[in-house]
Image (cartoon, rainbow, N blue to C red; front, side, top):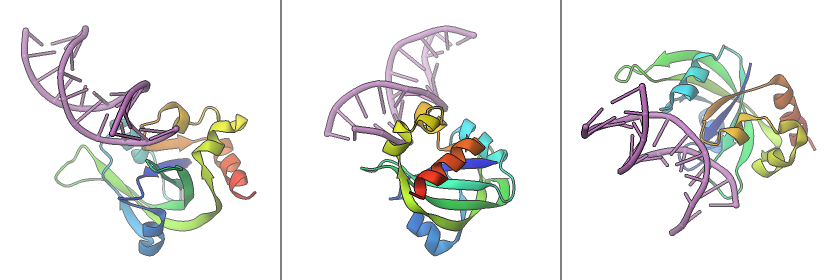
Length: 133
DNA sequence: GCCAACGTTGGC
DNA sequence: GCCAACGTTGGC
């Protein structure tokens, strides 16, 4: 499956991901987002999206390398482990996504606050092709 | 910095 | 179980 992970670059950025390579995707405190993480499988690919900045955009691709694990002291929530794969040739901006007729149903536009969301294979490939222009 | 959307909390 | 109050996210 394919996913989109949001992050505020001031707390965790694509550049951080490139430098650290592997990270626990933790800190999610929303049940819907958590359930999406629970549904992730090894080798699933995710876009990493920069939110809450002037020009929000998708920066790159990470891969799930560790299944969902609960936190020891907060068992209702947990994390998956992801590994850096590659940057997008050109980042894809929220503006581009908003104006793209093939992406009108993407959860990013409908549920602005959801931080971990599934993408259809069609949406995934459409975004990839936008990044290759 | 503002505000809309929306999830959570807590009183009843 | 309802709903008002409140806090957080995130686009602009």
